[in-house]
Length: 251
Ligand SMILES: Cc1cc2nc3c(=O)[nH]c(=O)nc-3n(C[C@H](O)[C@H](O)[C@H](O)COP(=O)(O)OP(=O)(O)OC[C@H]3O[C@@H](n4cnc5c(N)ncnc54)[C@H](O)[C@@H]3O)c2cc1C
Image (cartoon, rainbow, N blue to C red; front, side, top):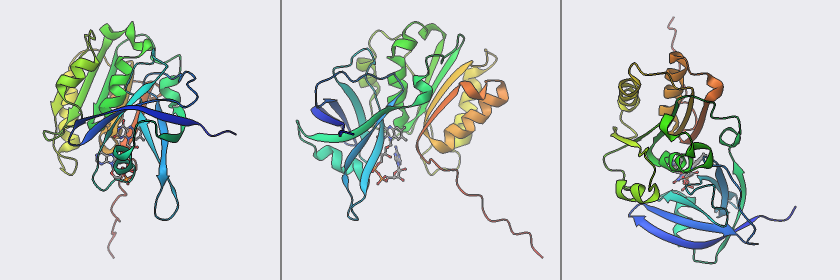
């Protein structure tokens, strides 16, 4: 099978810790995808010769297929996120995708209230969904929420307003404790309960970002009555549940 390549056509440094990259297919054919989906980029090999392949959610609208955008956080020691800022215009990367069967499912979302919830860098898939064709006719029945730390400068509120012009559902933004803080998950659950209050239980939900948070949010939604099959999840980090501490039964 021939290699699939993307060409970098534009990049913008939008904060000390993040960059937006615009890619098009190297053969200039349309890049078809559905809002909420992601691509896997092969950014090169590490020192052991292993390919550094990482997933990035597409942040631009799926009605535009000549190019698409991703936003990547510079993680300091991160492998791919250190290589990407060094790319020059015209550079090519091998890729696969678009991936994300759940977002791509034409039967989702079903009619009714939808909740799109993101933490941290998960805001990229939230934006991709709000800009998508499938949500364009249902924004009135959609609530979008972004949980971020006080220090997070990934995408500014001002830039989100520029990216989402005319979208009435600007995400409600809430500050939460840092990734290592033990109160992080409980803070999110508390805010979530206050948002949902007595209103209808979401028929559909899409959750993205910190796995430790979104696994708990999913459980909470299921407890409230949302069908598990209508909840999509993309864990950007903390993908594995932390192993339970070894139980000592004592003797
Ligand atoms: C479906 C999907 C979509 C994604 N979309 C995006 C996106 O739109 N933008 C984006 O920047 N990243 C996104 N990611 C994360 C991305 O794939 C990489 O994990 C990230 O860029 C770090 O790769 P790295 O090689 O630089 O770091 P690595 O060398 O892999 O190591 C960095 C460590 O940091 C952790 N990490 C990853 N993201 C964060 C974060 N936000 N905060 C704290 N720690 C983190 C990783 O789990 C890892 O343990 C997505 C991940 C998935 C699974």
